[in-house]
Length: 79
Image 1: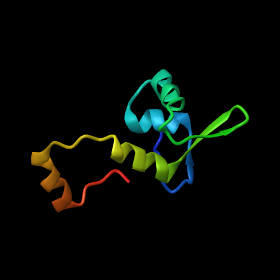
Image 2: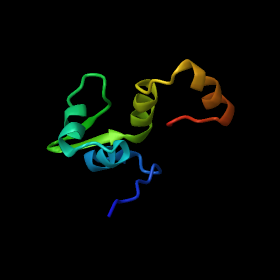
Image 3: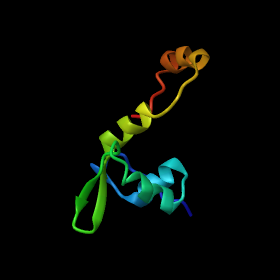
């Protein structure tokens, strides 16, 4: 059963990122090692600032030109 992700939290776990992006656990951990990915390391714990994560997803989401107008019309954005 998929856990609902609350974006009211200030920080997400790797499991939250995995679930949101529908990727494997390995892929989610690989993201945390990217230099451009927002991550907060607290000892062995990894937390991802929610708003920075959503901005990162938005920045890395390619929207074809013909859909960009529709995206703006309906106010679609990730964050």
